[in-house]
Amino acid sequence: MQNLTSNKNVLKWIDEVVSMTKPAEVMWIDGSEEQLNMLREEACKTGELKALNQEKYPGCYYHRSRKDDVARMEDKTYICSKNKENAGPTNNWKDPEEAYKLGREIFKNSMSGRIMYIIPYSMGPIGSPFSKIGFEVTDSIYVVLNMNIMTRIGRKVLDVLGDSNDFVRGVHGKCTLDIDKRYIFHFPEDNTIWSCNSAYGGNVLLGKKCFALRIASYQGWKQGWMAEHMLILGIENPAGEVKYVAAAFPSACGKTNLAMLIPPEIYSKKGYKVWTVGDDIAWLRIKEDGRLWAINPEAGFFGVAPGTNLKSNYNAMMSTKKNAIFTNVAYNLDDDTVWWEKHDDNAPENALDWQGNPWSGRTSKEKGAHPNSRFTAPAKNCPCISKEWESPEGVPISAIIFGGRRAKTAPLVYQSRNWQHGVFVGSILASETTAAAAGKVGVVRRDPMAMLPFCGYNMGDYFAHWLEMGEKMSNPPAIFHVNWFRTNEEGEFLWPGYGENFRVLEWIIKRCENKVAADKAPIGFIPKAEDINTEELDVSEEVLRELLTIDGDSWIKDVTSIEEFYKKIGDTLPKELKNELNVLKQNLNDLLNTSIA
Ligand code: GTP
Ligand code: SPV
Ligand code: MN
Image (cartoon, rainbow, N blue to C red; front, top):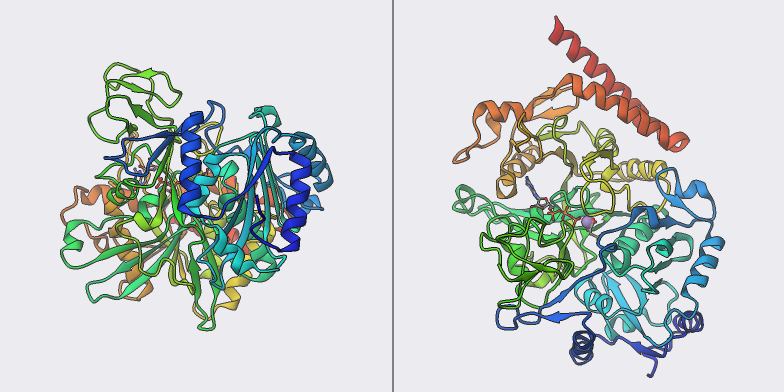
């Protein structure tokens, strides 16, 4: 096939990859529907994809990955910087020479008999000054079709790139899918990503976590901007004014849901609306007005399926009704549709589970869908997509929100005292682990800014970069922390969550506009109970007070775990954060003394 570009930097690199992997054929992905349709057909022939019921799900396909390849693998993910210190204490590190050598051995002839697809893609709207270009070379049609949804691909990207050498070089190969030889190598200093022996999500859609977070966070550090694991949403008030917030929650902790929430009726009746700009990643820059502006570098959603239904997330459901791909959910044999836990109350009787075994929603004890099963859906399908979502300039951010799954310690919401304290609040973010990554589920771990698995450099330097960004802004966003997951003694959620989270967003926006007072607490500002609107909400005043309580004892325990975490960060931990920790300790001591007295 003819080259799609005459860019010598690209062609030289492609030659290297070809001579390493020795594909039978090379195919440039031009982004045309004609070519994509050909690939869809081919994938259906080999069984890599299955076409769903085209009346109910036009343009939609089903895919199953291997049983041991269903989530990001953090222990297989490496930052390969020249100096180990630059990867820092929270990342796996491998010497780049060693990683390239190992990678070359694994990739050697790995595409023989296969077709190598070359995907030119743009993260961010094509041509936006915020956007960046990457290439993913892959031997997986599934990857091509997912990248087509998640990013902007094809010929138009090459037109923007021209002869430039500024692009990220991504190589993905399924190889033999051998878990023992699975690696996701990042070379931030070379703009390079190599991923082998996986065919799943964040391990292989190299534009997403690998580029848009790990490589981009490194680029942002060097170039004075930020790449964050954040959703972006706009809140429109009845006067038609829109305020934007960005929120960082760890994987499977509610970003997609918050990004697309539908306000409770008491608000929608008055004219409040929520608009989605992005659901997973934000690239943030300071503009001349001294504010922080964000774009969503992605073009689609790779969302958690289980728990998603018309009630919990109507907008996500609607986004998946056409041109979507479903991975590792259950397959209804009666009408060629998909199902997952909590999809609806009518679990199919005659189905296949996520591993392809016969499965019945009535009698099977196992789950039909894998807990980390996902949909890939074009953002433009989303009924509440913001009209600014492809704005080349991005949107101005009024508030940053951190959050996680904490059964006890963290209150429903609190506000930091200022940017520096807000960076501290982000740095101590902790959450119970989820099925989004392989490993134990439900264990509390510190996940600073929800970036623990995604920061492409030393976490201490990353904190310092956050502090520095704050100094450069004359009008920085206010920083908050939320927790939708606090439980009672029985382990039930105290807060109804989902659309009702709008009530907390309302308080946050009011705080940004100086329209509501708050109580000073040891950890920051907390709402007065009467300022969280519980009109038409089944939450008693007692429960609301519990949600807003700061339990001194569990915070003291938390401080011990923060100290351990900070010790692990070591010398690069900014002194400002150490000071903030001391302030927190002092405040908690004061609280405990007064409450004892
Ligand atoms: P990633 O795509 O992995 O980054 O996840 P995410 O942060 O976008 O999480 P998502 O919105 O997909 O939600 C993950 C799980 O949390 C789903 O099972 C949701 O149903 C559940 N969830 C989301 N929001 C809430 C909430 O407000 N309350 C409760 N109890 N559960 C929620
Ligand atoms: C996450 O795990 O945060 C995801 C899914 O958004 S993945 O693309 O697999 O990283
Ligand atoms: Mn995510």
